[in-house]
Image (cartoon, rainbow, N blue to C red; front, side):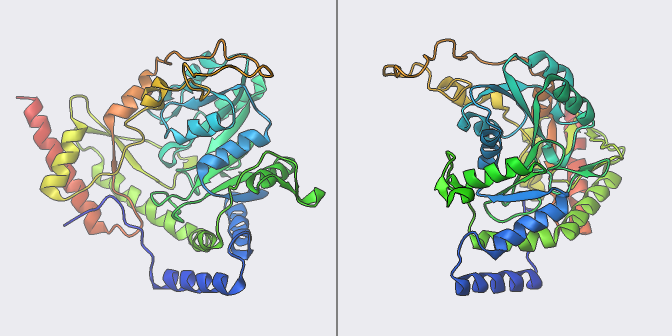
Length: 404
């Protein structure tokens, strides 16, 4: 049996809808900013309960757009080091400075204690990333702390389509949320992103930034420093198909995770990740921890070579603060030791942070000890059983080697 890293299933009905939609787009003459984009956005509002949704080229530019629309510039923004670097890049591209924060192994998310330690006088926002489709049980504490300090809470929902806490959907837990529809995600369009918000003024400004800064109230004259962050109607057709089927897709992922939970309960050499009952996950990843001493790379290699089981990438094996980008750039995205004279009309770059940020024990533990099992909607019970059986055999063998 061969278990790949990912499969993206489109059944006959899905393909018929997509083909019909693409033909409709071609016949319409509206290849962008048309009816499918509007429907895609409307469906995301229905799914999340947000008042407004804005289809974007990707999640990274969605984060940048949120920050710029909030008129945050030259400030520090808190980002967990346990995330994909794109979260931090959204901060840098918006003209702000990244301050990394540690994460807790039991939540894969921001450690509130470390958050409180790393706040500075110029901290304007915190980006809460729902890693693996898990909303942190510390959400209320983090939100309350931000409210107390007058700091904005922004969500990175790239992993978390359809997740909720106490009945509240992601994308509505902060001032705005950003989603990804990359092929590995819960809902997929190839490329593409989405912003959700309940703030109407913010929505209007973000709509302008998405579309080259054009202001409809001024005859589409450009009144914002915008960009081309639009999606095509072809991408939107896929988005409509995916969000229409979101309930079914998420239920299948939850059922697969439930079967993993049942089969792995009590297994040696691993620790399952516990998700509180008030938090509903769509299981972008099925996460579990390996016991100390077990070599993740070796286990992945044995599963691949001996059982044809491919494990997915971690979340994350490389932490943001350790990426080689910081050898060349400061935490404000400025080149270190940049050549050339400073513009006489701008302040100098003196005082720019260029030392490495350190001290992230929780994130270091996460990065070294967890694995992600295959999880996609058409994974069969037989395949799940095979993955679990193969994993148990490999771990049992490795534990015997450790105990010799």
